[in-house]
Length: 378
View 1 (tube, rainbow, N blue to C red):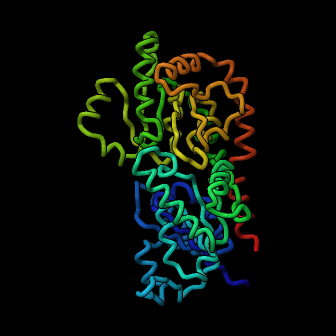
View 2 (view 1 turned 90 degrees about the horizontal axis):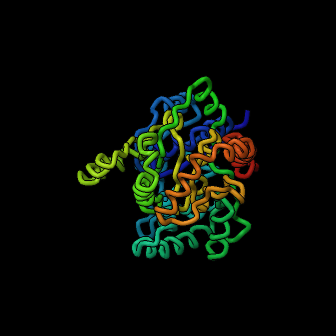
View 3 (view 1 turned 60 degrees about the horizontal axis):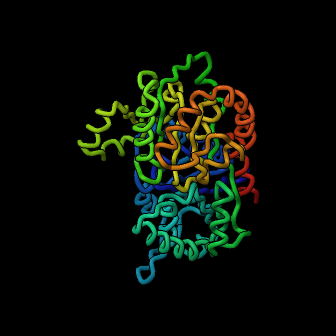
């Protein structure tokens, strides 16, 4: 029997590994020993899923501090370089900007085993704020340095690949494009089987940040009920976001949302319970996502989406999709929203083609097969 190869998954949070990489870890651990490392635990995660992976015997979880204590044998203080002693590492799969930057402390031989997975270019690359514009310049320089010696760079859409090549961040031969993390179509269909839909909410699902279009959503709501008052008793606007973002809201902001009758809900491990009540989604994001899981899931369920043409969103729709946002003027967005929620014939017409596109290109099976075939072929 062949000895199992040691594969490291290194991410920012334990939540990220459970939420987005559970199926990948499960698949890779069938033929390898998988070591999952995280910087912090992050938002609430499903402990039973982590336990199930650990119980499989081929998966272990460590904070970075505990892993280094267990596995490092040499730390050069003159120029910090970590080398692994007790275990031989075959591949190191690194997600998120923090772990990517931290990988600079690895030895030269370890760097050759690294696969960087850019889930999206993130807030640093999509924000126009002065702080992030400065950070962008710094991060690009760090990426250029790190990507020279790594094994592969994975991106989730061709726009991100184009950005890396055109900005001379890495060579074209090192980049592979993956179909995201994939969505679990069987699970979605099972959850919605025999359930009665109750579409009454117009939803915003995402972080409470400018780049996600949070304030555009608020002012679209203001214009929508001002110019189309006939819908005020029929629909409710709702914000679904991480619990940490809710905690950061000030008392004045909470008071404003209550006054405007905008419901505020914490994002759960699955958004399916929310989708059942969604009449429409507004996604006015400029955020540099790899592929938007929310858009993929909502599209598959046939929920109308008023969407930006941002990377990671545009890929899901046909090129002539009728409800890309024409203007970020909230009045214009409210007009498009009013038209969209009444355009049932259009969404019936495109529903099956959207589902086929997602099934054929962005299912979890497609994502897992693409990842393992490109990275674990040798």
